[in-house]
Each structure stands twice: as structure tokens, then as C-alpha cells.
Length: 190
Length: 190
Image 1 (cartoon, rainbow over the protein chains, first blue to last red):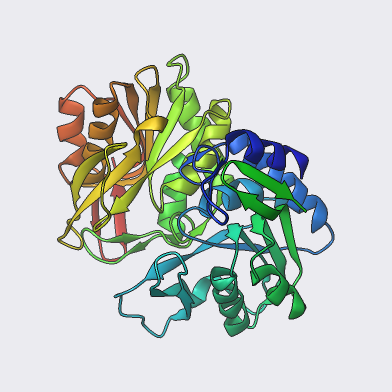
Image 2 (cartoon, each protein chain N blue to C red):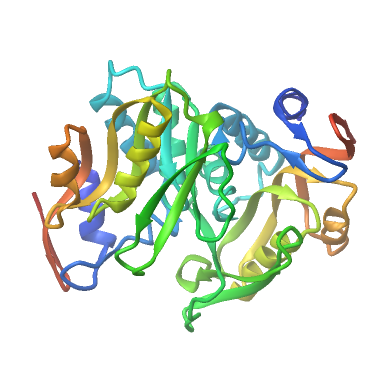
């Protein structure tokens, strides 16, 4: 998606070969006009897939998921919560997610009430790198017996293995900007 | 705001005299059509106040803040992050927020880059009870030297002291549903 790639080139900060900061428009300060454009693109890509629910994960996925949901006829958005210490009761689906940045394992949880077998779920998240968060979200959908329509990702680091692994399982992943390679101050898209 | 009050009556769960669960439409599963209505109401209330930025706090404020921002001409949304252990560097504004639910004190932080003296800031959050989170967000705006236009709150527990205290300081607070009193299974709005 050209406008997202252009925005990353202009306002993203390429800190190293694998660290990209987009906190001026994507995940600390948020450009909701851009989110609406991204939502329109995901809605175009998943037109005809009868999405009934969008699933995301706190915190940085929530804004783009909610604005995108308006482009899917205002389907409900559910966000998985990160939980390290909380007592997970029987009314929650839970999955383990290892953070490669922080090196710790978190549970992510979602109430069973809000993922149902009849749901056709689109997962939306800001980044896909090693795929740990996305794998966890897919597991929540599977536990619910819901139908996974696919995933809409803002930025995929295509030089890390998450996207390839998850597509190899037959999951449709639509990333709006796919980074082929990065260096300090430089970036190349696929 | 009648549609929010009606929705709370219909789908909210009044657990006790001070616990209201709205996780089916406000803060776990989210109704973005309702968020858009709420955004329109805040935009009507703050019309003419030239809001340039919306500030909220993770996680449950983010969705409604982003959808509301579309009704304010797509102004940028910034969310404060909760930080218990992180090293807060000099490029962050920080405030302490005591959680009355969990009894612990968290720092909330926002990058100095995204709150500037020229900003006219509307704070948006889902709940106002004792006012700790809102006080913290107001402090961040003050530290930045930005202009605080006011606060847009979804649900105010008017029987708790936060709203009164903050209004007494001269801050405009517009709550779309103000709860006068609650009991198990019952609720009365102001």
C-alpha cells in the first residue's frame, strides 16, 4: 500500500537492521485518517469474506482495528488482553505469547463470550515479525471454533520468519507494507 | 446521552454498588458504531474549541478516542502508556496514577514529542470514578504547556468524587452517561 510505505519512508525511524519506530503515526501518536485508508484497503482485500468480527491485541492494535471496523460495516472489535499475573478463569480463552523484544512469556486472554463458533474473524495488528502475537491470536480463534478469515497487518518485517510460517499453515495474511530489508536510515519494501 | 444510557441499561452488568461491567460493548468487545455516535456528541459539545489533539490512556480508551477523532477532523490521537518498571527517560512526560481497583501506583508516560505547547488537547477516557487516571492525564497536558480544552468521558460514576474534584479546578468535563447510583441489577442516571 503505497501511502503507508511512503509514510514509513517519511516519518519512520530506522534504528537498526531490525528496529523500525513508527510511533509518530502508528502506535503512540496515531493518524486516524491513515487508519481509515488502511481499513478501506483491508475491506477491499477481504470483500466477500463476510467478516463478522475483528480481533486485535492491546494496546497498539486497538486504534487501527476500531477505525478499520467502520469499513466492515461496524462489526464488533474484540481486543485480547495481555496478562502476566492475572488468574485466568474458565470463561477465558488463553494463549502463550513470547515477546522477542522483552524475552518474557505473557498470556493473552479473551472472554469466551466474545468469540463464538459462528464468528468469521479477521485479525488486525500493527506489526508482524516473528509471528508470536499472531500465532497466539490464531490460537484464540481456533479454541473458540470460530472461522479465521485471515489477518490484516500494517507492517510486516518480511525478513523475519513469522509471515512465511503462518502463510505456510494456510492462513491468509495481508500486510499493507512488507519490508524486505532495513538498515540505519534506509529501508526497502518488497 | 440517551443511547449510551439505554445501552448500559440493556447490556451493562451492575455487579455491586460500585462495579459496572460494560465489556460487551465498551472495553473488551467494542461497538464502533456507538463510538462514532459518542464522537459526534463530543464534537458537538466541543465545537468551536479548536481541538488539535486527543489524549487518552491504554488500553480501553484507545478505540473510542480514535473513532471520536474522526469527528474532530481526524486530529492525531496520543495514548499515554502505563509503565511500572520501565526506565523513564528525559524525553517523556510522566505522572503517577494510583489504581483504586488494584491498589498499586503506576507511572503513565507520554513522549514529549507528541504533546506540544501549541496543542489544544481534549482528553477522552471510558470511565471517571475517583479521577486518578484523569488527574494524571491532565498533569501530562500541563507539563507540556499545552492548552487543556476539557475531557470527554463515556461513563462517570457521579457518586464517586473524581468528577466534582476535577470540575472544581475549572476543568470542563463532559460525561455522556452519569450514574447517580447503582445496585445489583439496578442503575439510576443523573
